[in-house]
Amino acid sequence: MNNKTFLSGIAISVGMALSTMAFATENGAPSTAPGVYGFSAGYMPPVTDVGAFSIRSSIYRADKNLDGKGDDKLEKFSQTVKSLSLTYINMTEHTFQGANYGYGIVVPALELEIDGRVPGANIAVVGSDSSIGDIQIIPYILQWHPSDNLATNTQLQIQIPTGHYDKDDTITTGLNHWTISPAFNVTYLTDSGFEVSSSFQLDINTENKDTNYTSGVEYRHEFALGQHVDDWTIGLGGFFYKQLTDDKAPASSNIVNGNRSSAVAVGPELSFFRPGLPFVSFHIYKEFEAKNRTQGYNAALLVSQSF
Figure 1: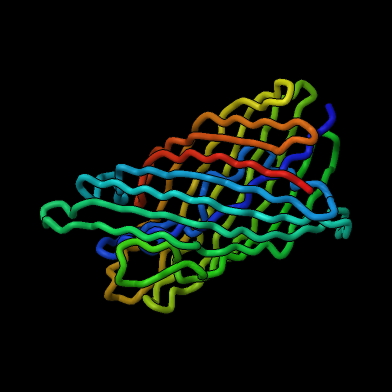
Figure 2: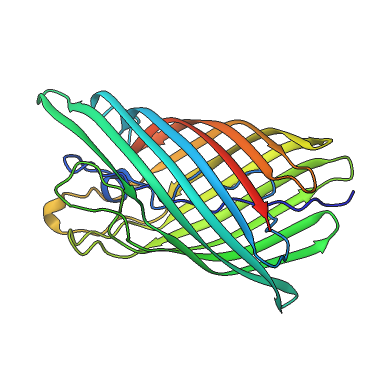
């Protein structure tokens, strides 16, 4: 079958801090947001005069904050992360090793709330923040089309500490460190219209200079499986997240070796594409088996258009 051209969303930054508790990665926050690459992960926008714009709205709600054994660390816990991000990607006619070269930028706006109590201590953990988050630049994207049914791309994302940050605040929109994220994305379509898409990404973090804390290397595999029916693709998506290395911090932080974050998420995913119209995708993921981090639900809507 002929491949359709899609615009896959680029990761937005989500900064979450819990200064009163100890977690894997600093304050238990993933450095970049999961649940971004679903259907058509292997496709970048086509080469056009202006480029492609996308807007992505998402909400994350968690009612559990879990330790390394999967037990609750806070009572009556709730956390909400609302985000609205604008992405610009420009694929060019320039080629390298048979791939089209492109670049991009992601600007997120975030609204965060957290509420909970430390068990047995009657200490409230409450906070909120809203502002522009950590901006991402994508200095290179390389897009290949090895065959009619296969599309792959690789890219480098650099997350800049532009969001609001104060080490004494309970929750902030910025992480106060840089994150370098190489990624490889692939989509395969069978002749009958069944799609398999995957994204593989590493997050390599620099030191937070205000706390002398360096979060460990993080790995994320996002996936989507679905059937194309006319202009629609219907199926399941999700992600597997795991911290690969220990954090580094001053001795006073009481870091436990091997205290690393992990989680799995899965849920329904739906996308729509018709030539000349915007590409639209929607998913709802439920997280499972979370350790040293929050566990909840994520819903996201992406709309994109090339010009």
